[in-house]
Image 1 (cartoon, protein in one colour):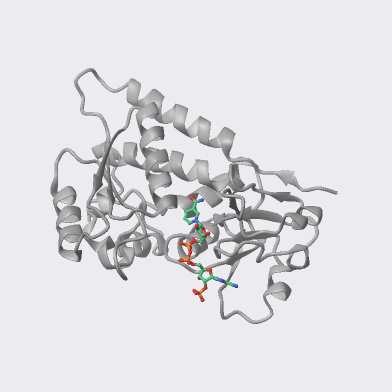
Image 2 (cartoon, protein in one colour):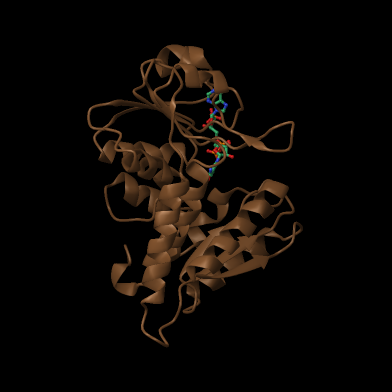
Length: 286
Ligand code: NAP
């Protein structure tokens, strides 16, 4: 038995088409949604990701401005740039690409992004609002997990969802999004004991550890649905997820890497920018 493939390509295409149709329907002369992407790295994967966002944005009619501060950018320069963009009337959405220079973490800067423009849920206020059940932009990757599950009509109510990974960009927001859909949620991390015993109880398993091959057939309950968020470099220069390919012989369905969560994430970012640009649809102001 081989697992069904939960491709993200069709859903991503639908989301992009809906964004472009809504932008095309904006009144003549109305401002277009503008996404500002702040980057300060030469990291290859990050550069590729920023390029793919810019290209998807251009196709959908979202204006994307990449502000490359260079890998030597100081914390002051990064902070000032994010604050200026937050204040700029012309900017609808803001993303800070990672990694950031030195030991800089997104969490150090997220609070500088106006929550109304925080299209990738980097501001702790966004995560807090999500946890409180209030409207907020969820990190696009975490939202892509549940959107993919919904697209394939995976029943979540009362099911056991196990998330491997507790980062603020994937694992933690995914907890709230899954809880909101009435799943029973367990979160695992690097200190979790008996990981395979826990993951084997999952009806839905979300792999977001960033470790290729971490989850093997031994970790999977027969028939489980797996969403593989991991994007790890493979020796042949491609990318692979966190789930060992042999797990497909046990799982009921699995999202591929690449072509699963990734394209949905990018499409959702564009949708968030459009939402942020449409003042009446803003989830905030605070
Ligand atoms: P992260 O910040 O490094 O977090 C990884 C999490 O996995 C941590 O909570 C860590 O536990 C846990 N973990 C690591 N090794 C583990 C192990 N052996 N057993 C159990 N748990 C383990 O990474 P992230 O930013 O959340 O990203 C996770 C993965 O998703 C990466 O591969 C990343 O590239 C990918 N990603 C994909 C997209 C997309 O659009 N497709 C977007 C974002 C991220 P501790 O907390 O204990 O350290």
